Image (cartoon, one colour):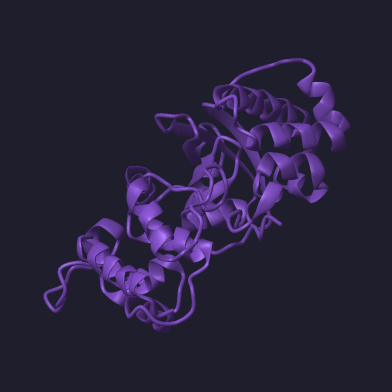
Length: 286
């Protein structure tokens, strides 16, 4: 990197980190802080990048950032949709289509996710692509972010990869399949008629999954607004939780958070999850 556009990219990153209050993203605001916003190392930490690499970006040097890194920076810096697009243009990367793992997450939804420190929570798309998880969600469900292509959707993995179903007890598989199909039908109908992502996903699943084809033919439709789930966890055992949803205005994204189911031992189990430090105890969702 080294062109005028990349120099502008560095200046843009500096300006955006300067406007974020550290307390808004969980960093202390001690008397020794010498900058009004975030430090470079803090942005690097939030984006999952090395400090040296991020320093190079702000200097307009180094290699061209990947689309995944740009998505992580956009979330770390709480960029608006227009600012996110501008970041991609400055980096000479195509702006990703909505719905994939690099989809823009509204800053307000990210802020709310950040404030949910004592309960597992994550932001997913209407096609069940995980965009961002808090540490407790990673510990409870496994790391479900970072996947690309059709496999990024948990619904796709549910009907094509048997290991994806280990998250739920076998006795619940039928109900989960039916709920996933009904939710997908509602999401696909709500999208624009020109949308190809949902249509391609449905066509693929009709072709490769007889179970999906049978359920799709029943034409059941229902958004998943709240559920009571039983989840298999390698350390905690069977955890029963309430799964609640907060939808974005266009319905394309939802914030999920998990609370203990009344009358079960799940409150103590989730407390233990927090004590264990939010480690990825459930393993990767691959």
